[in-house]
Image 1 (cartoon, rainbow, N blue to C red):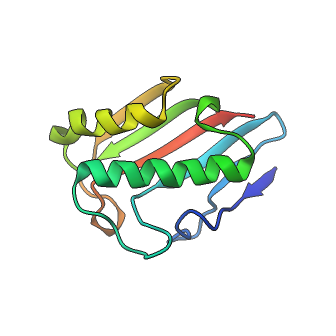
Image 2 (tube, helix red, strand yellow):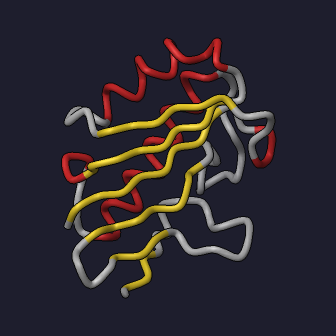
Length: 123
């Protein structure tokens, strides 16, 4: 396996990697919360946080040498299911190939984030 790391995404906040590419050609990305890698801060509101999550996922895809069109599955976490529609509006701008997806509401996310996105992509 090949470990993936990107300076354009926030550094992991725990004992995990940004992602891995398997020998069979799949890229598994760790979940990305909306931390701006330059400032270390999170923007306000679900739309801005979804945008930052997508940018962070995009940085990992770029580091793996692929793009959003290669994503085959995402898992999305929302701190409040009432943000579902607004989340989808921003999400759809990035994940234009409409990959398979799970989207669930969870009790809490790291650092008080409103959303998190992880993905699997084909090389």
